[in-house]
Structure formats: structure tokens, C-alpha cells
Image (cartoon, rainbow, N blue to C red):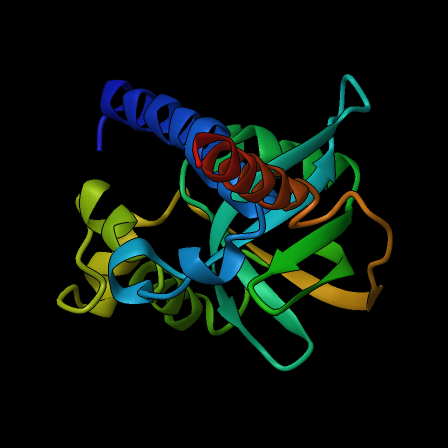
Length: 190
């Protein structure tokens, strides 16, 4: 994919993430997001610290699970902001459909099973791989190696369970408020 197309896709995914994916996670819909992984993808949210601002950032990513870690992919290569952030500050928080935990992010792009892990992540990306012009089920290893040469592979190694209120579902109270407004409106109309 050429640089112009990659930049356009990166911008599109950032908007999709900011305006749809992150709000859905914060509203407590994380299991719904992951209900049909072959279409929507297997998605986690990575909470990381900005390397320049120190601000907390949330980035949805496709992943492949391992025993005590998960692997994610910087499909836009080393220019991805989240990737540069985790290199500068590898202590991250991982939001999964069934929980959240603290992790250490490590670039493992030279992993001996790189192509197998990348294929797993791309298959788990649902529509995203095809939008990027990749068919991980049909590409040979050599073709996949060539097409993903700039991709960065990151392992998120479990360190501890995460606690606190600033995690997935922190805005789920909105559903209760909307329900109460609905009931009040129905009672008012009687």
C-alpha cells in the first residue's frame, strides 16, 4: 500500500476509534463489540501514556492471545503514535472483553514465530485486514512477510490485575440514567 493510502486509512481508523470504538467500550459494550470477531474483529483497548504530553490515550487494537500475554500489531508501522508511546513508556493497561490488567509492552518484531502471530492477528481483525488489502487466509508466508515487512509486533505481557474506576464501562451509568428518563417520561404521559 502506498503512503497516501496508508495515511488515509490511518486517519479513518483514528476517527472510527475515537467516535465509535472508545465510546462503546466506555459505555460497557465491550462484549458486544467482540461478539462477531470474523466480521468486527477481536478487539482490545490499550491504555498508554503519551510520550510528549503525558496524557492517557486509549487505542483499540486487534489481538491474538497467548498464555500470559497478548500480541498486537502496529499495522501502520513505526509511525503509529500508540506504538511510539509504548516504546517510550512500556507500562500499559489492557482492556479485554472479559477483564483488564496491567502489562509491559515489548516490541517483538523479530519473534521467531512472527509470521504465524501476524497471520493470527490479521485473521482476528475481521474487516480491517481486507480494508488494508490483505487476505491472511490466502496469502503464502512469503507474500505475507513481504506485505507486512514494516508492521511492528508487540507483546503485552501480563503483570497484575488492574483496579480503579477509569476502565471499560466507566460510562455505563448513562444506561441507568437513560432508563430512568424513559420510565419518568412514560409515567408522565399516563
